Length: 365
Ligand SMILES: *Cc1c(COP(=O)(O)O)cnc(C)c1O
Image (spheres, helix red, strand yellow):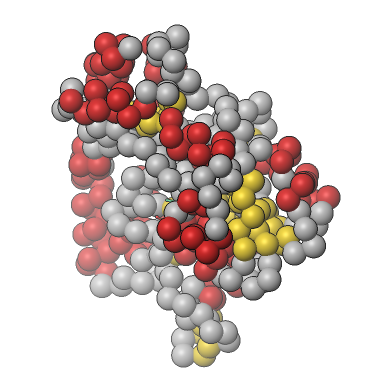
């Protein structure tokens, strides 16, 4: 049996330090808005190279609070990839704005910068690039377009902590950026958690205040906020895991390079491609084939779990039936959804497991 992602085994590597972190917070009796959160925020901001980091409850909240801080709402349009996890779209519709989908490049799966300008209207307020599957979007080009049209940029960096475009890390390109520490993400908490990163002090203050009931001083509320905070326990766990993220990224990149080498010219398999100047931290390792469903069944029969990221693009989800998008509206996103399959990748996967997976794929073709 090869699991898609063995979180038990991944977290076991950190067992001693995670238990120490738990004991420290448990003994302190202080669970919300304390030194653990402040320490993690400082460390994560430094890791991204951004000035401010604000811990929040999860990645979706990080996106929503980012859009709210920019004043985006009803009547506004936000450009977003047609190929993404639905959370990117949900944040936009949650604040009352309209998601305007732009197709990805069929080779990199990230938003195609060449198709953005034609979608800009007087109502466009922001571009939300998603660093999908761990690869930085072509953020340099996207920021250029945003500057030309005076638009905001909000990175959805839930999947690509540590990736870079032209040497500048993700989470640091937009006016404000959101990330997720969902347990399965590259930097995963032991529960829900997320963060906003920015170099703008005013936006940072606004996110922090909004996520804390709209209050800067207890029981004095400046604005109608929400409760969306990173808690002390999760922050303590994340501080433990942040120390090794770099080493884990290198391991993920090694696994990807091994897959790339071993799966080259096997059947009709299409391997992942990096855009010029962009790196990937391989949150996911995606291959594509016309025989996707049969290949997945073949791997399942051999005890190898795989996942489809994602089987239905947002525009075809029932949740967005009001948009009246039929099949064929975003053919590239649909093509990816129909042909992609994620192979197991993690910092603890062994070369023996990779060779089992590769041999199983070869036996299928
Ligand atoms: C995981 C994810 C989110 C949402 O993060 P949560 O912490 O699960 O709310 C948003 N966008 C993308 C691209 C994601 O992968």
